[in-house]
Image (cartoon, rainbow, N blue to C red; front, side, top):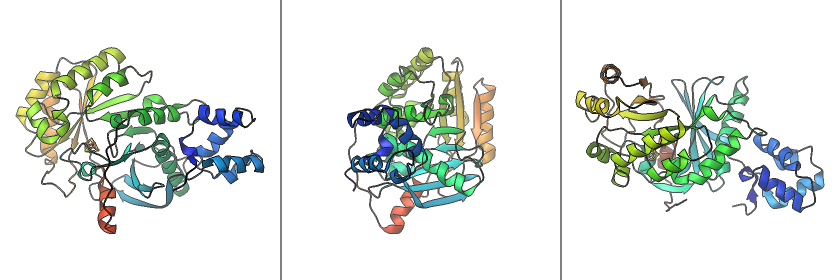
Length: 362
Ligand code: SF4
């Protein structure tokens, strides 16, 4: 592994300070960041002198995510990419929608330790957190690959932090990556076009409410009561539904922003009239919430199944008739391995590699 600091993890402040320390003007940082955002190597940074490029190379590495052998699956308007990281781990990100108007779904960890019963990432456990640069690098890499293939600029329309991992378990890197993305002198991505999804880490929901960021929040609910939720999501043991819902109410109160509840429909588990009734009872008086229903995308590692489309629609109609704002979303990429973490899992199987598991805290 390269001992030098990855350029991808630098921002205008850290790079500016380094340039000042070597007697160069601070604005060089912005010059370099522009090249980084294009994933260009240091020696291609033509507005720096050759000696300055050499100095930069001594201190920083220009190893970006490896897109040269990226694995790509294509299905139903969804392209799933697996990019290699410098330590030979791999990170998944997904292009949802056509190249000129797509949503990028990105990861914040390699694997995930939270073991939701329906999720491929959870099956492999947590390997490590991603750095801010590795998170932003997914967007830059997606852009590079997509713009190369199609006659478009390659930037996504929306970014959702819903790939491998729990963003709030890697809180600082997640926030740093958002700040890099929305930097008005840099990538300048629209802050309102970013959504962070959490499984429901209560302290971080309060912390997030206090960030000065107009980023959307989605919370994975997946069950209307604590017992059922516990059977689907082990995190319920740590942060029970009552505490989670209080945190969500406080978040809405504090930010005035709409909150989205994600609800994966699992056949004969959480998709019946009883569950719909309980959701209506709980949420009919809530303002500024929206439910996203998603038919489960089977991962082949569990017996869980999606309900039939008609059943899913009936569930949605029950909620709607009960006064809940709700959308039934298509689960993209059924034929490919589009459940989160699944492509990476298959690569492990194919190459007989076992992931190295690690404890990670932020
Ligand atoms: S659904 Fe999200 S939080 Fe749950 S195991 Fe998968 S990646 Fe982790």
